[in-house]
Length: 313
Ligand SMILES: *Cc1c(COP(=O)(O)O)cnc(C)c1O
Image (cartoon, rainbow, N blue to C red; front, side):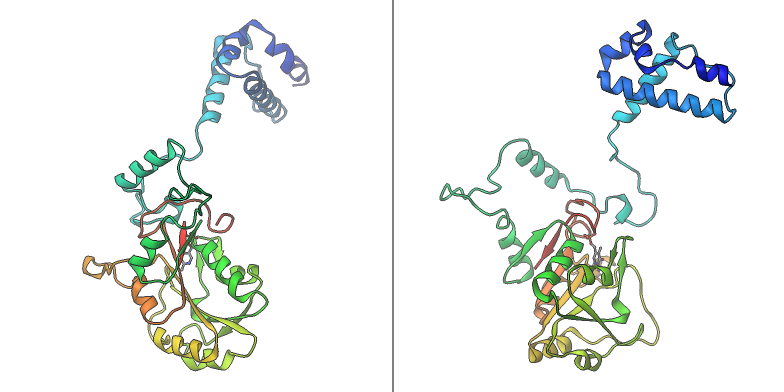
């Protein structure tokens, strides 16, 4: 083994050998050197572990080809198309909604060139990137104002930061959700600088529980849609109208994380239990957050937690 280990060539010597000329003309020197280094490391490890009892012929075309294969594999984009055979149409691990051909065409049309992202075409002055879709969201939901951020997790975090930093957020024990592994409501509340006040029980929470938790330090009553589980049986959740009346009588804000949220009632198509954003707003909820890449079919930008495709309405 030690003889073979000593026979392993140096990276620089191999790079200068005639066998590598083809690779060096096809790929960058850095790529070839890095790949060679990792190939030699793997050989060294195999020798030491007794998995190998002879070295490859470094001058042979087959060795160069094995390096070329590694480089090609490295060059593959990590993100690639997949087949969703899970039975779950909007799957968080599989990029959720697919983009409609019209949406792709619009991205192609705007993304292939410069755009008026932050330019007001009427005045020729700097514009705001937040205005492009606000009027559409307001029209579709009945909201007074709307803002699109990276995703729903970001919308929740930012909304809480803006309204409840250093103050209390009251949420039901039945709605302390975890979505997709990274979005855990208690953690998001903590990250926003607010303090969670849990009320009720897993199966039953009444308006009275919220009412009793409200004190001068309370900024927000937070409802969350239990998107990926159901509590069935002996249950109670107060109506939005009840909570809205309570919030407005106590000077607090009623906020709801709708998760997916839909713009039209999908129950005729068999999708029940998805609250329609306009209904939620009409029932008195002050701030509604929902994900743009679930039923709305928008872009899935990135992981919930670390980047901020959703709307804060
Ligand atoms: C999906 C979901 C989120 C997170 O949405 P992202 O767009 O992935 O950030 C948050 N809250 C609820 C209730 C959800 O269903």
